[in-house]
Length: 484
Image 1: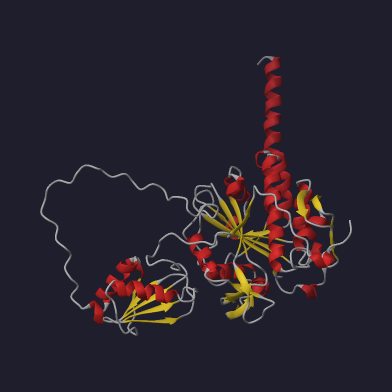
Image 2 (image 1 turned 60 degrees about the vertical axis):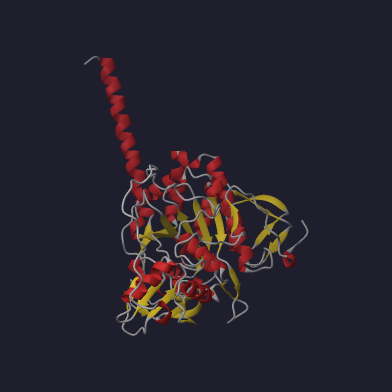
């Protein structure tokens, strides 16, 4: 072998070994950074999903734990057990990777928490009603927060990511700061947020203060805080896209190192390839299709200082999510149906009308149980049943459920099938029940509008607070405005 070829071969060999060593170092470093926990705590989605394809929901949590590096923000008494979810958002990635919806849940929202089991201690905690949603993971862990969101929305969360205070500081430093805007100069002594009027670049402690503050924005409540958090994430998204971070291996490694050191994920996401796959799905999405939404709420009946789901807007939002509606354009047409032949039909026997049912519709008892969460919803379905000939009807309010079902008693299978067909409810959702006298249509949150099941979901016009393309300026709380 000529001398020059030996030199070239040696250099290439060294480069290859060095590259492999570099890649191996970072793979092991990032993998060892990752902490993990079970996805569920007694129910919900236990099936494996493909991270590369298909629709995916990821629950993003911000923990208020004061353990370790977070001790400077309080004492252990401030956050016992697993800590509370200081921030709770669900990121919904569409199957075609063309849009993302980020739904925020206020920490003051009162919800029903299902029975949860702490997978570390095997202790079982009973179901509770009318509890703040940020308490879901405090006793039984992150999986209980996942199960609570599943129960509330009727969806099945595929993964979770939980970060603490330190993660926010270090991520904002890694990207060189995030631009935020506020209407007036403000100082919040609780969070230590101090900002001048207008636009500022925040990072480190000030970025954390911006996301943590509960009093600096709007009327000092949780909803103003959510809008500020969404404005921060919108700005962060624009910066990452504009800087080409997702296409720059060096920048990605830096951010990945910071994030994985302060991140807890579920077992299915606890690998570097899985995290990279999620990043790859997000890198080409148009930021105008990244929609930030807050769950519609109203002051709670049980406690005016807390919140409850506002109806029918809340049920409409969850139904739209289950139907995979584009929240930035709810009227967007569905994919075109498969083309069929337009040739005229061949001559054949004259079609006859279907035979009449072997019963009198007017004599069949059909009740409607309103489990949709929308007051008065049962009356709309009763009217549809009466129009269809089922005039012996009744209605009552029932426990809210996710899926609509048609129950039927002995000898009423044929009636139930006709009732389901009239309302467009799939045959798979017909259930025999010996205790039902006749037929019962049990409405769920998947059937909150219209008289035909599975129709397009109605949504309030202002359901989207902003998209990642929008630069928003937060309204300062008048009580905390100071002089520049």
